[in-house]
Amino acid sequence: MRRSRQRCACLVLACASAYLQPTTTRRATRLHAKEPLLRIGHGYDIHRLDSREEAGQPIVIAGVRFDGSEGHAPDFELGCVAHSDGDVIYHSVVDAILGALTMPDIGCLFPDNDPRLKGADSSIFMEEAYKRMTDRGYRLGNCDVTLICQKPRVNVDAVGGGLVKEKMVGNVASLLHTDVSMVNVKARTHEKVDSVGECRAIECHVVLTLERED
Image (cartoon, rainbow, N blue to C red; front, top):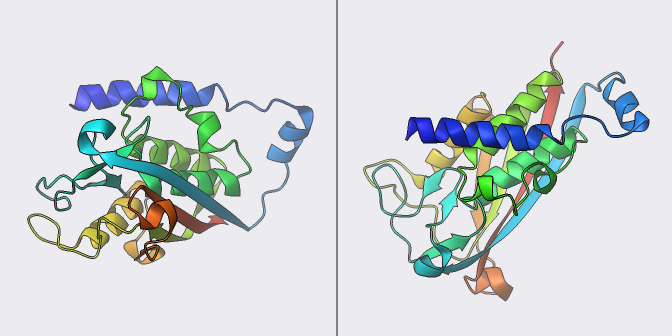
């Protein structure tokens, strides 16, 4: 498992590196300009839900699988339709970091038509976003997550103990190398309105700040 994850990580980094170099003189000039003390980023993601059989994988939110396995969330009958594992929180956090840094978005760095990323663990995307953040001389200020889903419920106990939402917060904080007090995960339903309210999709918004390290 570790070797497979390492191979996947190498493929993801190789994929992302193709987009790392500035493509215009204007872009290069901006990257070398004096960095501001504070940057703000917003990220958004949505994924379609379907039967576990059709989706081919369970729902994964902030690294927590809804498959009834030990240390994760209770089993849920639907799965997430996505090229990677479809983790809406991780994807939104990554896009917020990249946006704050005025870098290409997650879809440019990790294309959903790249076979190397099929079923990829989205924590790898988080690790790449964190590396880019620190390479630019920034650390996370705070991260505010709003998860919107009719189901599954996240304000529940995890299998084996602990709260699902607290595990989500812990996972995000760990990947961004910050304290859990800097990460907030809010969850709400969509009042049975449209695709999210009808349990046909799940979505997430993230707003975060990056602070320059002197």
